[in-house]
Structure formats: C-alpha cells, structure tokens
Length: 302
Image 1 (spheres, helix red, strand yellow):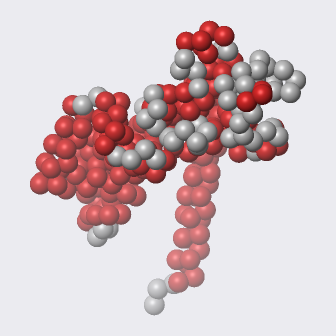
Image 2 (cartoon, one colour; image 1 turned 120 degrees about the vertical axis):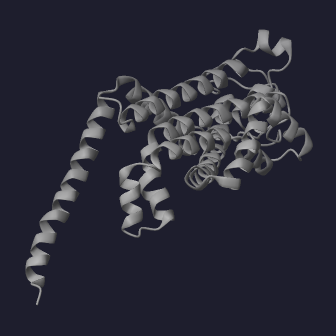
Image 3 (cartoon, one colour; image 1 turned 180 degrees about the vertical axis):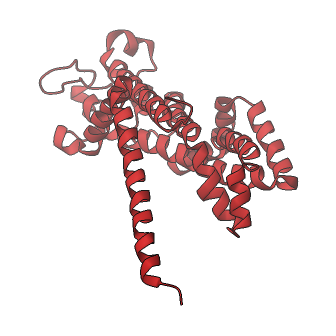
C-alpha cells in the first residue's frame, strides 16, 4: 500500500517552493520596474491623466457639451482655467471628459487587435498548413497598405460612429501581433519542453496558451502599448479631419477639430494647445511605461 501521508508531506514542500519562487520572481520584476526611472515617469503621467478623466466631475463643474455663445473664445481665466472654444464650451472640461472616450478607443482597439492576433498567431504558428497560408497572405495584403490610409478608407465606407471606429481599429490592429506570435511559435514549438508536454498528454490548447504564449509576453506588451498610443493619435487625426467620432461626442480629436480655422490657431491658441499637450503627454507616458514592462518581461534583459 502506498503511503499517502508521506506523499502528501513531500508534495506540500514542493508546492510551497513553487509559490516561493513565483513570489520571488514577481518581487524581482517589481523591483526592476521601480528602478526604471522612465517607466515610473510614464506610469505617473498615465495615472494622473487617467484619474483626472475618470473623476472629471470632481475637477470641473462645467458641462463639456454646453454651448454658451456669450462666452466663446474666452482666454484662460479663473472661471475657465483653460479658456473656452469657439462655441463657448469649457476646454478643460472637454479635455477631461473627452479623454475618457479617446483612451477607451485606444485601449479597446489595441486590446481587441492583440487578442485576435494572439489567437490567430498561436494557431498558425503551432499547426501551420492551410490555416497559416491563408492568414499569412491576408496579413501581407493588410500590411501592404499604410494603416492610416486603410483606416481612412474604412471610415469613409462605414457609417461615422464610435462603435464603427472600434471595429476599424481592431480590424487593422491585429496584423503586427499575429506575425510576431506566429514567428515566435515557429521557433518555440520544437523546444524540448513542448515535446515533453506532448509526451505527458497535455492538450495542444494548453501547450499553446499556457506554455508557449507566455514566452512571447514581452514583445506583445510592446505592441499593445504602441498600438494604444497609435490609435489615440489616429482618433485625434480622424476627428480633426471630421472623419472620426461624431462631433457631438467630446474627444481629444474633436477638441482639436474646433481649431481647424487659421484665425482660431493664431488668435486662440489655448483651444488647440491644451489638448495637444495632453495627447502628447499621455502617449509619451504609454511609450515610457511600455518600454519598462518590456525590459521586465524580456528574458534577454539582465
């Protein structure tokens, strides 16, 4: 008869050792991230802007959509700390409330693209065959067209709405992740730990998503952060041109749209300068923090 008590006793220390190693690794990663000054600066920029946008009613009393023609194009003052636009709407209020939508667009588009790219890349890189051939050709076609041009074409074809903008960014943002994950899977699927997992009868799905995919986490994080920043900038550009989010929804791009006239640019610089600086700081923060996370998760970094 096997000694279940002995087995239980020997299993407990092993489990405790694994937990301790996991905790130690997490601690080392956190310490490494904290020592990266640029990553901390990026995190602070992201956190400050994000908190102010989420808690916008605590920082401003003005309705971002309220039109007050008697207050139009007012310079910054105690009443309106960042001035008003050409329709009398408070610029500071529009930046905070508009940040909610702009950040949501960037995060949703990037996250959706990364998820789709990871799933397709895992399947194509692990199995190859006809599935890989089809999606490789599709990705080559998509990459052959500049993304901003492809987005412009889709925006003009589809109805101008917030939901359609989500769909467009997700549909154009999966290619980079797909090709990266696919390439990594081609090199990792022949590793000894993958062969051992197959020998122990572990399912292909578990091998793909629990054993191989985590080894591509560093580059995926970089792509996610770059896509998030890129989609925020693209939304701003599209809305500035009148092709993005509907004008009645405040976003950073729609705020800039109010400064399309040369007279507004020269006579009322606060209308475009404030949202422009906000966009730049947030995108810069994302890039700094993304680089810090890449250094933490990249096994090649010391």
